Image (cartoon, rainbow over all chains, first blue to last red):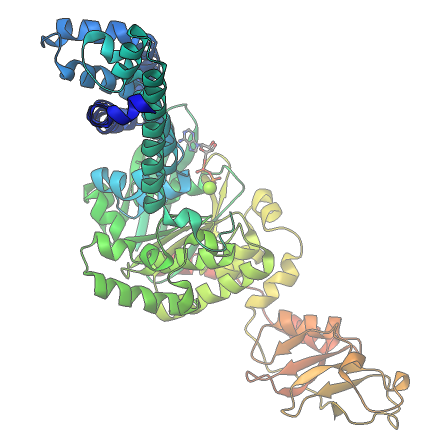
Length: 215
Length: 372
Ligand SMILES: Nc1ncnc2c1ncn2[C@@H]1O[C@H](COP(=O)(O)OP(=O)(O)O)[C@@H](O)[C@H]1O
Ligand SMILES: [Mg+2]
């Protein structure tokens, strides 16, 4: 524990930037995936296109995407924006399908009833469809969160620091404790993200845990 | 008044779901669309609030072509109830009921008051208000569905098989609640069902549709049972239609006989009749007993409960059934408060039936004309 005890400050600084680099794309990705997922539901021809495109995006190796970012969006090579944008792309790729499936899980009779009562557009989306899609979307978001936390660590290789630095640095300098600290910190962070999403989901879906529910 | 003029709906695949439908649903009455599955009932219903647009033809509400009306406004003025209620699972019962008032911009307090009032109207206990739909039985959910449709007091209600998914006992209760409500509210209702018995019980006017979306016959239920226009309608209205049509005969005065009764707890040992009627302290019939099988006083477990009880003001069908089901062959007749007024025999009811007229031709489209 000596290495860790001597480096608490550094670990916390790296963890903070890890939270940003993994968390911000999660939020941005969700915000982008919502309208895309909605469009995929709305226009049936869009669905397969979006699904295969996003599947394809996800197969691009993260390092390649990080490296290509400056070329695509014209940023500086060491700019953390590169990582945020790349991670957002991954998140969108994961979440488009989740959002589309979540909206698709809303029972048809509920949708018909909403329509018949004069619900339309935004109000129907935010008032009926989205709240009912929360359980499915939250499940996808948990996967994306864990995957973001792990992928972001690769960014050390392009000079954007976060917890991944502990792994590369520990490896370069043969400090096993540093490597272990990096792994544990990543796991803890992933668990915290997961817990927060779970908490949010529970707050948003009180009806799922209503006492004596029949189904 | 809702009016269909030569309305046809052809789906993109080519299916003609509704074929040249013309009919009028009069204001304040219940018009039932009935027919086998796939005959275009739902399609017809949804064209009224424009969830589906007709291919040709027009539908008008009180003389105004619905195609010219604002879609959302049109819908908020039309209550809609569907088979599985379609309640919002994420909202409490109270909030479900308040949906349309909120959409119309009522304030929270006003909406909640109105919603509570409606829950009481459809016979739901106030403590159910804060539950979620998944915590209710199917019948309760359906009541909430009706309350929700009524919340903003729309003049028109569309109901698509609202009671089909609940068990028969609950269905009867829901039908009765519904008829009670309609008696008070007098909405213009289109009610869809595939169940001819339900159609006949609820409809002021019944439209029978055949597969392919063609109107086979439209008339009041009694006339429909007495004069089906063709084999399809005759088949569809089904067996026992002679018997069932009795429920629409105006009830003449029944020739009632006085019945010897005993009160629960009395001894019947000295009675020599085969069957005697047992009543409670308020003279309400409880059931028949056989004195020969009882050696002391009458207790509840002696009661034979096979016989039905009919109201004097009820239909001839009820009176005949009471006579046929009674072990003594004497049908038990009560007044509106449930008190025994006498008994009647099957042959006496039959004589009354023979003396009465069948529904005649000129009642064919009385309702339809009244509406136009
Ligand atoms: N959206 C649709 N697209 C194509 N065909 C449809 C659609 N909806 C219903 N149909 C067809 O139209 C006919 C009438 O359907 P519907 O109005 O639902 O009948 P019902 O409610 O009497 O069972 C059926 O043959 C059905 O398969
Ligand atoms: Mg239907």
